[in-house]
Structures are given as C-alpha cells and as structure tokens.
Length: 547
Image (tube, rainbow, N blue to C red; front, side, top):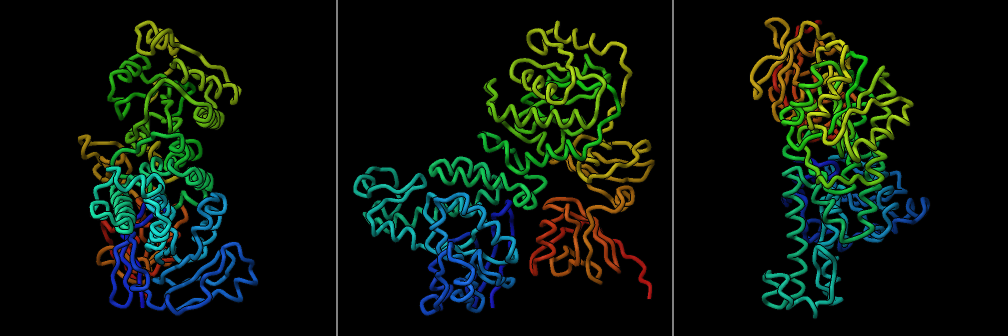
C-alpha cells in the first residue's frame, strides 16, 4: 500500500510526503525509481506514446498495483494515494499547447491526493517548471542521458562538457573531481531543492517567471496555463505571505491578479455616490499611508468614490486598499506602459465603469495612466473630467481636483460592505456595523457583539459565528456526523461550495456541530481527496441533535 499527503500547495505545485512499503519520500524529489518501484524492471505495457489513439491505449496501457500508468486518452482513473506515472512526458516539453492541454485533461481525471511521476523528463533547466506544473517525483535518467552525450547540465541549459567542466561555473563535488555524471545529478537535485524552498516561501511563481526564460517553450507554456484561467484559478490561494512581485509581463495574467480584477468588477459593491475619482497608485501601501494620497484625500474630502489605477491589478477601490494583493505587491516603475498592459487595465476600468454607472468620472492622472483612463472612458462611452496640470501632487493640480468636486455631496466610505462583497460575494446591511481597534488588531462589531476580526497581514475578514449569520448561506463546508476535535480532514467532508479556495474563511456545517475556520485546500480537492487537512478549525459550536 502507498499514500500521498500534500503539506503545502502553490497552485499546482505541492510539497508532501509519499510512503510505499516502508520507503518514505519528501516531495518534490528525484529518486532512483527502481528502488521505490522495484517492479519497474519487469512490468510491461506502461510506455505508451502520449499521442497514441484511444483504442491503442486501451489495449496496451496497464496499471500495476499502486503504480498507475496514465494517459490522456485512457478513461481509467488512478486510486487515491497511488503514484501516477506519465511516461514519455519529455516528448511534449517542446510543444507548449500539447503540454498544457494534456496536463489539464490528466489533472481533472485523477484524484488530487496522488503523487505525479514524470520518468526521464527532468533536467536542471526544466524541473522547476515541471514542479510548477504539478509533478512531484523525478528520476535521474534524463541527466544520465545528457552525461552519456557529454553534456554539462545547468539551469540555463545543456552545454558541451569539454567547454564547461573546467570553466569555474560550478564548484560541486562532481566538478572538483571531474565527474560529469555526479555534477549533472547534483545540479538536478539542487534545482529541485530550490523549487521546494520556493513553494514553502510562497514565491514559486516569481521564481518560475525568471527560470522559464532559458527555454522558450516553457515561457509559452506559462502563458497558456494562465490563459486556461478556469483550470488554474481554483488552485490559487486567496492570499500569500510576503510580497507579490510583478516583475514581468506574465505577472499581469497570474491567477491571483486576474481574480482580484474579476472580483472588483463582478462582486465589489462600492460606496453609493454619483462621482468616481481615478487616482494614481503609490509605492507605499496601503496607498492612504503615502504622502501623495493624503494630499489627494485632503482635496477630495469624501466627495467622490476613490479608485486607484495601478499595474498589475488594474483598479483598486479605496475600500480594498488593505486587502491582498492590493497592499502586498511590488512592480518596477519606469513610467512606460506596454500595449498589453494598457489594454488589460483599460478593459478592467471600462467594465467597472459600465457596471456602476457613475454620473461623473474625474481623472486625476498623468502620462501613461491618463492615456489608459482615456481608452477606458472611450470604451465605456463616458466623458472624463481631467484635473492634472503637471504632477498630480502639484498645488495647482490639487486645487483643480478640489474645484472639480465643488458642490458634490459628502459620502461615508464603507470598507465593510466593500470588503465583504469582494471576499464573500454577498451584500450585507452595514449601517449598525463598526470597525474598532488598533491597526494590528481590528474587529468589526455590532453593538457589543463581534461579527468579524480582520487579518492584519491580508486585510481579509474572519467571521465569528455571529458573522456567519450576517453573511448567510455562503462558503460552506458540509461534514459528516461528528464533532470536530481539531482540524477537519478531507475524508470527513461531504460537500463544499464551489467558490472555496485555499485560504478562504469557511463555515463548517454538520449534523452535530458548527465550526468556523480557514480552508486548507480548495473545494474540488476537499471533495475528491481521502487524505489531508481540509479546514483549519478556529472554533467549534455543538448543536442540538434531533432524533
């Protein structure tokens, strides 16, 4: 028997533990596969070409015990805890469309609590991307073949060993002793260890955006993964620790960035007013902590709804400026906005303005951001009142901004409604709700009753039991007939709302208890896994059981 349990997730990538017949592996890892799977030396009919037809695959592809040889044209599914082996994956590494679409098919077909093995596919230049794609287990056959061919393996590619071995580019034991095979194996193991560390830090995506540059097909594959948003987004956490570094064009399409913009357009409920004010972003976050935004707010004086134009997020309403990733991203600032960047941001702004129908839109912007706002206004069929003359913080510009809002009624910004609508996709009455406490420990109360606490690191709301009553029927996990004594494991989950993602606040409902906590995996993984923590429980409330 074997089992696999994911410990830390990063979209499709995972760290985890695989155990089989007393052999325990901490993944991702490169192993001598015949040691873990001794039957590999004798089994037949696993090495079916990936492009083989359905009838050929059905005839010749065989499963062996808990080693499941799978194929995109096979209807047979692996069992939970087994090792999923995808033979010949190296043959699609240079074809990004086939790579992504085959992987999407396979991932949907097989249980999430399986470990994925790509025989002979891993090289130091490709293995990090394979980890990002959801593969967990590798062998040394690929690098051993390069050794036989006299090639020196690096993360940037494979080069003639006689030119590189003594070039001083590596100081590993293999290079010191002149052993090319040892060097190539070391290079693979080190790259896997580095990818594993990036998963633990929540920075694998930034790492991959840089690493994939050494192989053009992998850049294309990354873009195609992002284009399959409906496949990738359910695996993306709602928040990460640390800073989201948007340092490349691909950052505009990463699922967390796209999700933020989609929720702003489709979920977010703004403070009611007839006037929107478009403002530039700032390096300091939340924006209202910067000197420039203090000046903007001094001129606006709550006479318009403040919307911050920024890359890569597109549009950040003032109510969401502390919510991940709005307060947690960093982007290189050059003053240049490329064509795709302009199109994506302008489209987001246009969709938002069309949806909410402001009577007036004031644009306090300059340069490229002003041009983007004009493009959005043209698309949405609205007119802009432009108030900048020179820099946005120049006294003359601020005076024009204040004059443009002369006579407009003062509004009361509603960050509670804004955050709740964006996070939970519900509209709640907020007239009797108040935010109290210090910045590092804020809560939302109704009278003396606490309804939410606010996570200082992400800006997200954490409902109490009273809060879930306000929110209604959303983000629910249904469990079996038991009272949780700790975290809830996947086998105890009966159902989960489709909207749930890793890191979401959830309300747990069972026949004998309610609980509130944080999702440790997405809804689909909760429903299909037989191992692992599904919900990290914060509080449990027993309920009366009717006979």
